[in-house]
Length: 285
Picture (tube, rainbow, N blue to C red):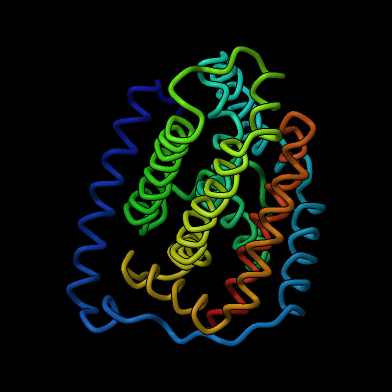
């Protein structure tokens, strides 16, 4: 039966409440597991290549469905960029585009679900991504999503503050003037160098807590704390490999963002599917 939006929303709230109660009971029963990470494996560059190949396979198997789902992501990005493109908000355009990497795992959780179902041999369609809302761990998934969204907002605030401290409170007179100040003044170079350093810290934190957290929450009945601890343990045991994975994500998002973010229609599905397969290599059953 087709429900009205209020009815559908009420149903989601009810499911979230029931999930929260269920998760609380599970946490009480698994007191040891909630405060410790799961066993993780060492992974290498070969595993990254394997995960990306599997990501391409998943993308190819459901290409039309996944593109239809992920086209929402770049469209939202274009809308936000357009709203921020007044000259007074011009300094926030690049931080906004770069900040999408912080919330990328949230955008990819539906793709993780599709890959999980394909691994089980099920037939999948674009609507299967929304089965995430039926997951027993939906509360943990939503909470972690809000954490990453909060990091995005914090990054934008810090970026604006950095601009004011280095370039002054006045908005750039034009796009050309803004680019000239960045490339031909010491204040502009200071802003870029410090901004890249701060952005690296934000990205490293997001990668640490979100590398495998979302697929782990989808796959197993674990608490949010266990998922985050396990993700951090994967990064700790595989620092170089996960650094390479973060670099792959950053470069892919940059390349996907160049043609007005439309390349993300292809980049996001592959990375989302690959994240699931990387999780399967890093966190054995």
